[in-house]
Amino acid sequence: MSDFTYTARSSSGQIQTGTIQAVSVTAATSSLRAKSLQPLIVKPRAKGGLNMEIKLPGGDRVKGKELVVFTRQFATMINAGVPMLKSLNTMKEQTESLALKRVITEVAADVEGGATLSGALAKHPTVFSPIYVNMVKAGETGGILDQVLNRLATQQEKDSAIKAKIRSAMIYPSVIGVVTIIAFFVLMTVIVPKIGHILSTLGSKLPIYTRILLKVSAIMKSPYFLLAVVIGVPILIYVFRRWKKTPDGRYKWHSLLLRMPIIKTIIVKVAIARFARIFASLMAAGVSIVDAINTTAGAMGNAVIEKELLNSNKAIKEGSQLSKELAKTPHFPKMVTQMLAIGEETGQTDTIIIKVAEFYEQEVDAVVASISSIIEPVMIIVLGGIVGLVAISVFGPITQLSTSVH
Picture 1 (cartoon, rainbow, N blue to C red):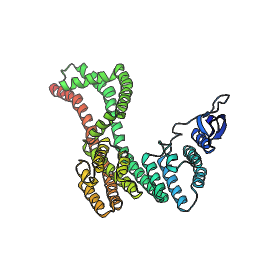
Picture 2 (picture 1 turned 90 degrees about the horizontal axis):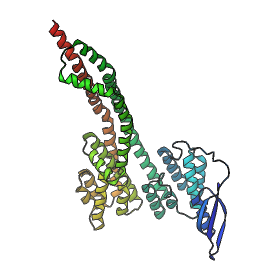
Picture 3 (picture 1 turned 60 degrees about the horizontal axis):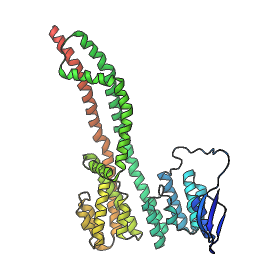
Picture 4 (picture 1 turned 30 degrees about the horizontal axis):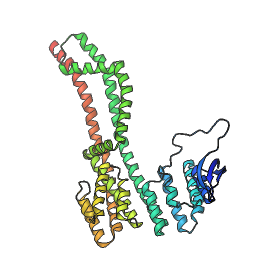
């Protein structure tokens, strides 16, 4: 608990000042409102001395696994009839994550101050996504909060599993790529210059490709080249990241990714699986189709597919069906739109679309499992090509010289 100074207006219009203890500014504000005071200024009380608090990197981040456990436990306690505030306080004591403990403390304080659970969660967007908040809000409205929380936990587990498999599949290609770059750099800066010196002492005329290789080697050995790499690469990475964060840059980058053969397949399948599971969960929670699409679009992970969803929503507001609108888009397969159409006709959209999610999650597993087998020979060919090019450029003149001597 911390001390906060406040200036507030009472119900009679009088201005009051004082000090209040709370876990955060938000909690202090809620407590003042609970006392029929309108907060005007609320800020931490100044303390003397030095602030010795040390924040470790990542200390404010809540991990995906921790959020899944929190959601699953919360659902179990709510289903068992434990009051919401008591459930939050119990989980606050049980969690080992300092970041999550701090978040739960502030959420509990807001709920105790009269805020809804969804409203309290919305104040922590780095932990609880708009999808999470909207589903909790739908669960509160429909009286099925425990069911919604269980769906959320399942959805998060599936999403985390897909991300973990993709990261795992990319480890080997990444290692091979780093080894290729290091091997090329060593060849060009250590081995090639020594052999080039030997060739120059022999006085023979070198082929054009050998002269080009030696010129590139000389450039790479230059301290100016190393300086340009050390300074230029971080600048390029920084500029690229800034550009990618802009709406136009993000859209163009995602559009480019959808033109790459293997990457396109993974992105589309992951997006469809995510769309199906989130959309089904929102529909089952009682969220309207328009709100469900708006919420789901933000979780696609690709600006192009997100735009296709949002464009279809405009037609749905005018009375069109989602299946018909998605059928016009280039990235939603016919199987998805056909099953969605069946769900719309039978009134079981959430049940049928879950089957789509399960199918595409299996498809993602199959594609991710084949990534290594596809990329491995490509990387070996690239590495072999580099070594072969250097070998031909260096040993070709030596072979010609030995032949001419004989």
